[in-house]
Image 1 (cartoon, helix red, strand yellow):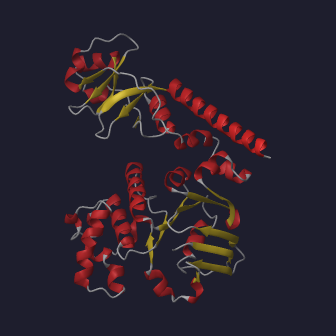
Image 2: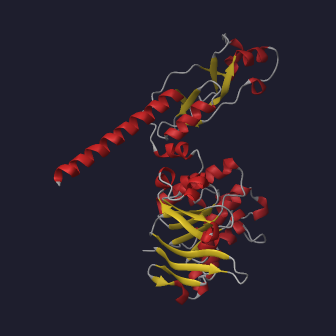
Image 3: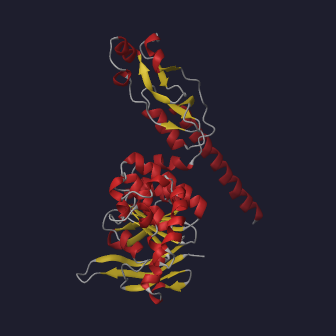
Length: 383
Protein backbone atom coordinates (compact mmCIF):
# COMPACT_ATOMS: atom_id res chain seq x y z
CA UNK A 1 0.00 0.00 0.00
CA UNK A 2 1.24 3.51 -0.81
CA UNK A 3 -1.53 5.88 0.22
CA UNK A 4 -0.50 9.48 0.88
CA UNK A 5 -2.08 11.60 3.61
CA UNK A 6 -1.78 15.34 4.30
CA UNK A 7 -2.83 16.37 7.82
CA UNK A 8 -3.00 20.07 8.73
CA UNK A 9 -0.36 20.97 6.14
CA UNK A 10 0.51 24.64 5.71
CA UNK A 11 3.40 26.42 4.00
CA UNK A 12 4.16 30.04 4.77
CA UNK A 13 7.26 31.72 3.34
CA UNK A 14 9.38 34.26 5.27
CA UNK A 15 7.77 37.16 3.40
CA UNK A 16 4.38 36.08 4.76
CA UNK A 17 3.09 34.44 1.58
CA UNK A 18 0.68 31.59 2.29
CA UNK A 19 1.40 28.97 -0.37
CA UNK A 20 -0.67 26.20 1.24
CA UNK A 21 -3.25 26.63 3.99
CA UNK A 22 -4.40 23.89 6.38
CA UNK A 23 -4.50 21.07 3.84
CA UNK A 24 -6.17 17.80 4.84
CA UNK A 25 -6.17 15.26 2.02
CA UNK A 26 -5.93 11.48 1.65
CA UNK A 27 -4.76 10.03 -1.67
CA UNK A 28 -5.61 6.36 -2.00
CA UNK A 29 -3.01 3.82 -3.05
CA UNK A 30 -3.10 3.07 -6.78
CA UNK A 31 -5.15 6.14 -7.65
CA UNK A 32 -4.44 8.85 -10.23
CA UNK A 33 -4.97 12.14 -8.41
CA UNK A 34 -4.67 15.46 -10.22
CA UNK A 35 -3.84 18.71 -8.41
CA UNK A 36 -5.43 21.41 -10.54
CA UNK A 37 -5.90 25.14 -10.25
CA UNK A 38 -4.64 28.50 -11.52
CA UNK A 39 -1.01 29.61 -11.25
CA UNK A 40 0.12 30.41 -7.72
CA UNK A 41 -2.52 28.33 -5.94
CA UNK A 42 -0.13 25.97 -4.14
CA UNK A 43 -0.68 22.82 -6.18
CA UNK A 44 3.00 22.38 -7.11
CA UNK A 45 4.12 23.30 -3.60
CA UNK A 46 1.77 20.66 -2.17
CA UNK A 47 3.11 18.01 -4.53
CA UNK A 48 6.77 18.86 -3.84
CA UNK A 49 6.21 18.45 -0.12
CA UNK A 50 5.52 14.74 -0.78
CA UNK A 51 9.18 14.11 -1.64
CA UNK A 52 10.49 16.78 0.78
CA UNK A 53 11.75 19.09 -1.93
CA UNK A 54 9.75 21.65 0.07
CA UNK A 55 9.23 21.33 3.81
CA UNK A 56 5.87 22.29 5.33
CA UNK A 57 5.61 25.00 7.97
CA UNK A 58 3.06 22.91 9.87
CA UNK A 59 1.38 19.52 9.71
CA UNK A 60 2.45 16.03 8.70
CA UNK A 61 2.55 13.98 5.50
CA UNK A 62 2.57 10.21 5.60
CA UNK A 63 3.17 7.61 2.90
CA UNK A 64 1.87 4.13 3.72
CA UNK A 65 1.35 5.36 7.28
CA UNK A 66 4.94 6.53 7.82
CA UNK A 67 5.69 10.16 8.58
CA UNK A 68 8.01 11.26 5.75
CA UNK A 69 9.81 13.72 8.04
CA UNK A 70 11.36 10.68 9.76
CA UNK A 71 12.74 9.27 6.48
CA UNK A 72 16.13 10.27 5.07
CA UNK A 73 15.24 12.61 2.16
CA UNK A 74 17.63 10.89 -0.28
CA UNK A 75 16.17 7.47 0.52
CA UNK A 76 12.66 8.92 0.25
CA UNK A 77 13.30 10.41 -3.20
CA UNK A 78 14.90 7.26 -4.55
CA UNK A 79 11.59 5.52 -3.88
CA UNK A 80 9.45 8.16 -5.60
CA UNK A 81 9.38 8.72 -9.36
CA UNK A 82 9.47 12.37 -10.43
CA UNK A 83 8.65 13.82 -13.85
CA UNK A 84 8.88 17.53 -14.72
CA UNK A 85 8.43 19.70 -17.81
CA UNK A 86 10.64 18.79 -20.78
CA UNK A 87 11.74 15.63 -18.99
CA UNK A 88 14.48 17.31 -16.95
CA UNK A 89 17.03 15.12 -18.69
CA UNK A 90 20.81 15.36 -18.21
CA UNK A 91 22.01 16.74 -21.58
CA UNK A 92 25.44 15.08 -21.45
CA UNK A 93 24.04 11.58 -20.91
CA UNK A 94 22.50 9.26 -23.45
CA UNK A 95 18.91 8.09 -23.18
CA UNK A 96 19.95 4.76 -21.68
CA UNK A 97 22.09 6.42 -19.00
CA UNK A 98 19.42 9.01 -18.20
CA UNK A 99 16.85 6.28 -17.61
CA UNK A 100 19.33 4.17 -15.61
CA UNK A 101 20.11 7.04 -13.21
CA UNK A 102 17.99 5.97 -10.22
CA UNK A 103 18.68 2.21 -10.44
CA UNK A 104 22.42 2.98 -10.44
CA UNK A 105 22.04 5.33 -7.47
CA UNK A 106 20.18 2.58 -5.64
CA UNK A 107 23.10 0.21 -6.11
CA UNK A 108 22.41 -1.68 -9.34
CA UNK A 109 25.41 -2.31 -11.58
CA UNK A 110 25.54 -0.04 -14.62
CA UNK A 111 25.38 -3.08 -16.91
CA UNK A 112 22.28 -4.51 -15.21
CA UNK A 113 20.60 -1.09 -15.13
CA UNK A 114 21.24 -0.48 -18.82
CA UNK A 115 19.86 -3.91 -19.73
CA UNK A 116 16.67 -3.22 -17.75
CA UNK A 117 16.28 0.19 -19.39
CA UNK A 118 15.44 -1.35 -22.76
CA UNK A 119 12.31 -2.95 -21.31
CA UNK A 120 11.28 0.36 -19.75
CA UNK A 121 11.69 2.09 -23.13
CA UNK A 122 9.36 -0.52 -24.62
CA UNK A 123 6.84 0.18 -21.87
CA UNK A 124 6.64 3.92 -22.60
CA UNK A 125 6.48 3.44 -26.37
CA UNK A 126 10.05 4.43 -27.30
CA UNK A 127 12.05 2.58 -29.94
CA UNK A 128 15.17 0.91 -28.55
CA UNK A 129 17.20 2.49 -31.33
CA UNK A 130 16.94 5.79 -29.42
CA UNK A 131 18.85 4.41 -26.43
CA UNK A 132 22.20 5.75 -27.62
CA UNK A 133 20.99 9.24 -28.50
CA UNK A 134 21.35 12.39 -26.44
CA UNK A 135 18.35 14.50 -25.34
CA UNK A 136 19.10 17.22 -27.90
CA UNK A 137 18.66 14.62 -30.66
CA UNK A 138 15.08 13.84 -29.58
CA UNK A 139 11.75 15.54 -30.24
CA UNK A 140 9.88 17.16 -27.36
CA UNK A 141 7.50 14.23 -27.10
CA UNK A 142 10.36 11.73 -27.09
CA UNK A 143 12.16 13.67 -24.36
CA UNK A 144 9.04 13.59 -22.23
CA UNK A 145 8.66 9.84 -22.71
CA UNK A 146 12.28 9.41 -21.61
CA UNK A 147 11.45 11.46 -18.51
CA UNK A 148 8.55 9.12 -17.72
CA UNK A 149 10.78 6.09 -18.38
CA UNK A 150 13.41 7.42 -15.96
CA UNK A 151 10.76 7.91 -13.28
CA UNK A 152 9.54 4.33 -13.75
CA UNK A 153 12.95 2.66 -14.06
CA UNK A 154 13.25 1.75 -10.37
CA UNK A 155 9.58 0.67 -10.21
CA UNK A 156 8.57 3.18 -7.50
CA UNK A 157 5.13 2.84 -5.89
CA UNK A 158 4.58 6.63 -6.04
CA UNK A 159 4.93 8.84 -9.12
CA UNK A 160 4.90 12.65 -8.99
CA UNK A 161 4.33 14.55 -12.24
CA UNK A 162 4.74 18.33 -12.32
CA UNK A 163 2.98 19.72 -15.42
CA UNK A 164 4.92 17.19 -17.52
CA UNK A 165 3.11 17.75 -20.83
CA UNK A 166 2.73 21.53 -20.86
CA UNK A 167 5.81 22.14 -23.05
CA UNK A 168 4.71 19.99 -26.01
CA UNK A 169 2.25 20.73 -28.81
CA UNK A 170 -1.43 19.74 -28.44
CA UNK A 171 -1.18 16.65 -30.68
CA UNK A 172 1.80 15.22 -28.80
CA UNK A 173 0.17 16.17 -25.52
CA UNK A 174 -2.90 14.13 -26.41
CA UNK A 175 -0.71 11.16 -27.33
CA UNK A 176 1.17 11.38 -24.02
CA UNK A 177 -2.09 11.55 -22.08
CA UNK A 178 -3.28 8.37 -23.77
CA UNK A 179 0.07 6.76 -22.97
CA UNK A 180 -0.27 7.69 -19.31
CA UNK A 181 -3.75 6.19 -19.16
CA UNK A 182 -2.40 2.96 -20.65
CA UNK A 183 0.55 2.85 -18.26
CA UNK A 184 -1.62 3.47 -15.20
CA UNK A 185 -4.06 0.74 -16.25
CA UNK A 186 -1.07 -1.61 -16.44
CA UNK A 187 1.02 -0.50 -13.44
CA UNK A 188 -1.47 0.91 -10.87
CA UNK A 189 0.95 3.42 -9.37
CA UNK A 190 -0.08 6.06 -6.86
CA UNK A 191 0.17 9.10 -9.14
CA UNK A 192 -0.01 12.76 -8.18
CA UNK A 193 -0.18 14.90 -11.32
CA UNK A 194 -0.09 18.71 -11.37
CA UNK A 195 -1.72 20.76 -14.14
CA UNK A 196 -3.50 24.07 -14.66
CA UNK A 197 -5.53 22.58 -17.53
CA UNK A 198 -8.98 21.39 -16.42
CA UNK A 199 -9.44 19.30 -19.59
CA UNK A 200 -6.19 17.43 -18.91
CA UNK A 201 -7.27 16.93 -15.31
CA UNK A 202 -10.63 15.50 -16.35
CA UNK A 203 -9.00 13.22 -18.93
CA UNK A 204 -6.45 11.71 -16.56
CA UNK A 205 -7.69 11.90 -13.00
CA UNK A 206 -9.61 9.41 -10.89
CA UNK A 207 -9.88 12.26 -8.37
CA UNK A 208 -9.35 16.00 -8.71
CA UNK A 209 -8.00 18.27 -5.96
CA UNK A 210 -8.99 21.81 -6.99
CA UNK A 211 -6.84 24.46 -5.30
CA UNK A 212 -7.66 28.15 -4.94
CA UNK A 213 -5.68 31.22 -3.98
CA UNK A 214 -3.55 30.86 -0.87
CA UNK A 215 -3.32 27.11 -1.38
CA UNK A 216 -6.81 26.47 -0.03
CA UNK A 217 -8.31 23.16 -1.16
CA UNK A 218 -11.69 23.99 -2.68
CA UNK A 219 -12.90 20.51 -3.64
CA UNK A 220 -11.57 16.95 -3.68
CA UNK A 221 -13.82 14.71 -5.69
CA UNK A 222 -14.28 12.66 -8.84
CA UNK A 223 -14.05 14.61 -12.12
CA UNK A 224 -17.72 13.97 -12.80
CA UNK A 225 -18.83 15.47 -9.46
CA UNK A 226 -16.47 18.44 -9.81
CA UNK A 227 -18.18 19.23 -13.11
CA UNK A 228 -21.75 18.49 -12.10
CA UNK A 229 -21.65 19.64 -8.47
CA UNK A 230 -18.90 22.25 -7.93
CA UNK A 231 -18.48 22.80 -4.21
CA UNK A 232 -17.74 26.53 -4.36
CA UNK A 233 -18.19 29.47 -6.69
CA UNK A 234 -14.44 29.37 -7.25
CA UNK A 235 -14.63 25.78 -8.56
CA UNK A 236 -17.62 26.63 -10.77
CA UNK A 237 -15.73 29.56 -12.29
CA UNK A 238 -12.53 27.57 -12.71
CA UNK A 239 -14.07 24.60 -14.52
CA UNK A 240 -15.90 27.06 -16.77
CA UNK A 241 -19.39 27.79 -18.00
CA UNK A 242 -19.10 24.91 -20.47
CA UNK A 243 -18.75 22.33 -17.70
CA UNK A 244 -21.98 20.68 -18.90
CA UNK A 245 -20.32 20.06 -22.25
CA UNK A 246 -17.23 18.66 -20.52
CA UNK A 247 -19.52 16.41 -18.49
CA UNK A 248 -20.53 14.62 -21.68
CA UNK A 249 -17.15 12.87 -21.54
CA UNK A 250 -18.61 10.60 -18.83
CA UNK A 251 -21.46 9.41 -21.04
CA UNK A 252 -21.09 6.57 -23.52
CA UNK A 253 -21.80 7.17 -27.22
CA UNK A 254 -22.16 3.53 -28.23
CA UNK A 255 -25.92 3.83 -28.75
CA UNK A 256 -25.85 6.90 -31.01
CA UNK A 257 -27.17 5.85 -34.46
CA UNK A 258 -24.60 5.60 -37.26
CA UNK A 259 -25.64 6.68 -40.75
CA UNK A 260 -24.12 5.75 -44.05
CA UNK A 261 -22.06 8.59 -45.54
CA UNK A 262 -20.92 9.06 -49.13
CA UNK A 263 -17.18 8.70 -49.59
CA UNK A 264 -14.69 8.93 -52.42
CA UNK A 265 -10.96 8.47 -52.79
CA UNK A 266 -8.65 11.32 -53.75
CA UNK A 267 -8.51 9.95 -57.30
CA UNK A 268 -12.29 10.03 -57.60
CA UNK A 269 -12.86 13.66 -56.58
CA UNK A 270 -12.76 15.12 -60.11
CA UNK A 271 -15.48 12.67 -61.18
CA UNK A 272 -17.98 13.75 -58.54
CA UNK A 273 -21.26 15.36 -59.55
CA UNK A 274 -22.54 17.36 -56.57
CA UNK A 275 -25.36 19.80 -56.00
CA UNK A 276 -24.96 22.92 -53.88
CA UNK A 277 -25.06 21.89 -50.22
CA UNK A 278 -23.89 18.30 -50.85
CA UNK A 279 -20.80 17.02 -49.05
CA UNK A 280 -18.64 13.96 -49.64
CA UNK A 281 -16.01 12.52 -47.31
CA UNK A 282 -12.65 11.98 -49.01
CA UNK A 283 -10.76 8.92 -47.73
CA UNK A 284 -7.38 7.39 -48.49
CA UNK A 285 -6.74 3.92 -49.89
CA UNK A 286 -7.33 2.39 -46.44
CA UNK A 287 -10.62 4.18 -45.89
CA UNK A 288 -9.21 6.70 -43.42
CA UNK A 289 -10.79 10.18 -43.59
CA UNK A 290 -8.78 12.92 -45.31
CA UNK A 291 -11.42 15.68 -45.28
CA UNK A 292 -14.80 16.86 -46.53
CA UNK A 293 -15.34 18.34 -49.99
CA UNK A 294 -18.33 20.11 -51.54
CA UNK A 295 -19.16 21.32 -55.04
CA UNK A 296 -16.89 24.37 -54.68
CA UNK A 297 -13.94 22.16 -53.88
CA UNK A 298 -14.70 19.79 -56.75
CA UNK A 299 -14.81 22.71 -59.19
CA UNK A 300 -11.50 23.98 -57.79
CA UNK A 301 -9.86 20.60 -58.36
CA UNK A 302 -11.15 20.56 -61.92
CA UNK A 303 -9.71 24.05 -62.32
CA UNK A 304 -6.24 22.83 -61.42
CA UNK A 305 -6.03 23.55 -57.69
CA UNK A 306 -4.75 20.82 -55.40
CA UNK A 307 -7.13 18.69 -53.39
CA UNK A 308 -5.58 19.90 -50.12
CA UNK A 309 -6.31 23.55 -50.99
CA UNK A 310 -9.89 22.71 -51.99
CA UNK A 311 -11.05 20.61 -49.06
CA UNK A 312 -12.80 22.10 -46.07
CA UNK A 313 -11.59 21.15 -42.59
CA UNK A 314 -12.36 17.55 -41.82
CA UNK A 315 -13.71 18.08 -38.32
CA UNK A 316 -13.06 15.78 -35.37
CA UNK A 317 -13.28 12.01 -35.45
CA UNK A 318 -14.59 9.66 -32.79
CA UNK A 319 -15.01 5.96 -32.11
CA UNK A 320 -18.40 4.55 -31.08
CA UNK A 321 -16.65 3.24 -27.95
CA UNK A 322 -15.92 6.88 -27.11
CA UNK A 323 -18.15 9.35 -25.29
CA UNK A 324 -20.94 11.81 -26.10
CA UNK A 325 -18.57 14.78 -25.92
CA UNK A 326 -16.42 13.32 -28.69
CA UNK A 327 -19.49 12.46 -30.76
CA UNK A 328 -21.02 15.92 -30.40
CA UNK A 329 -17.70 17.65 -31.10
CA UNK A 330 -17.26 15.54 -34.23
CA UNK A 331 -20.70 16.54 -35.50
CA UNK A 332 -20.55 20.27 -34.77
CA UNK A 333 -16.95 20.73 -35.96
CA UNK A 334 -17.63 19.05 -39.30
CA UNK A 335 -18.44 21.42 -42.19
CA UNK A 336 -20.94 18.82 -43.36
CA UNK A 337 -22.68 18.71 -39.97
CA UNK A 338 -21.92 14.99 -39.77
CA UNK A 339 -19.49 13.52 -37.25
CA UNK A 340 -17.32 10.73 -38.63
CA UNK A 341 -17.03 7.50 -36.65
CA UNK A 342 -13.87 5.48 -37.24
CA UNK A 343 -12.92 1.94 -36.29
CA UNK A 344 -9.71 0.85 -34.57
CA UNK A 345 -7.78 1.05 -37.84
CA UNK A 346 -8.94 4.64 -38.37
CA UNK A 347 -11.24 3.80 -41.28
CA UNK A 348 -14.56 5.63 -41.56
CA UNK A 349 -17.61 3.46 -40.98
CA UNK A 350 -20.49 5.85 -40.41
CA UNK A 351 -21.66 9.30 -39.40
CA UNK A 352 -23.56 10.84 -36.50
CA UNK A 353 -25.83 13.88 -36.27
CA UNK A 354 -25.68 16.40 -33.43
CA UNK A 355 -29.45 16.20 -32.93
CA UNK A 356 -29.24 12.46 -32.33
CA UNK A 357 -26.35 12.88 -29.90
CA UNK A 358 -28.55 15.24 -27.87
CA UNK A 359 -31.44 12.76 -28.08
CA UNK A 360 -29.11 10.12 -26.66
CA UNK A 361 -28.19 12.48 -23.82
CA UNK A 362 -31.87 13.10 -23.06
CA UNK A 363 -32.53 9.36 -23.01
CA UNK A 364 -29.66 8.69 -20.62
CA UNK A 365 -30.83 11.43 -18.27
CA UNK A 366 -34.40 10.11 -18.31
CA UNK A 367 -33.14 6.63 -17.41
CA UNK A 368 -31.04 8.07 -14.57
CA UNK A 369 -34.04 10.03 -13.23
CA UNK A 370 -36.20 6.91 -13.34
CA UNK A 371 -33.55 4.93 -11.46
CA UNK A 372 -33.22 7.64 -8.78
CA UNK A 373 -36.99 7.75 -8.36
CA UNK A 374 -37.20 3.97 -8.11
CA UNK A 375 -34.45 3.89 -5.48
CA UNK A 376 -36.13 6.69 -3.51
CA UNK A 377 -39.55 5.01 -3.41
CA UNK A 378 -37.98 1.66 -2.47
CA UNK A 379 -36.30 3.37 0.49
CA UNK A 380 -39.56 5.07 1.46
CA UNK A 381 -41.43 1.78 1.30
CA UNK A 382 -38.82 0.05 3.46
CA UNK A 383 -39.21 2.60 6.28
